[in-house]
Length: 153
Image 1 (tube, one colour):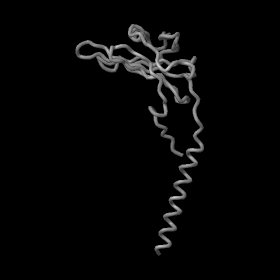
Image 2: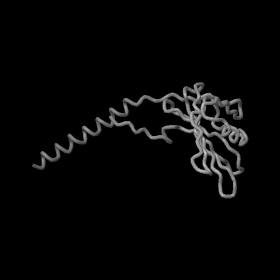
Image 3: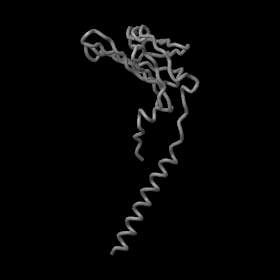
Image 4: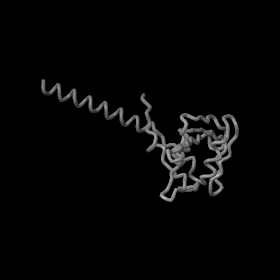
């Protein structure tokens, strides 16, 4: 009976290992959409404020430092609460990548922006971050680290 139990356990472990390796083999690396762009791009706060005036369905051209322009149609511009507004811009120039950005107004009327530029088909993107001096930057990210793959086969 001990021999049967150990053989069964060995067979189960082998099947689990084979399944794990087959999933790794099927995952081909995704290309990088922003390989030609810098690790960090400055974002003027005035430009972030301006895009929230663009209505859903209109074209948006967001100009960042270094001649990085994210242009596309505003697919969503929603005021979720009195202190929170979110919008999404979809850019055909970047293979339909989306720029999702939110603006939150604090109790002292300070404004904070957060957002990301991502495309599920590519391995990189940008995240909007604020530094200690209050300046905003798009920082390059690896989307595999930010968005885990949840595919089940």
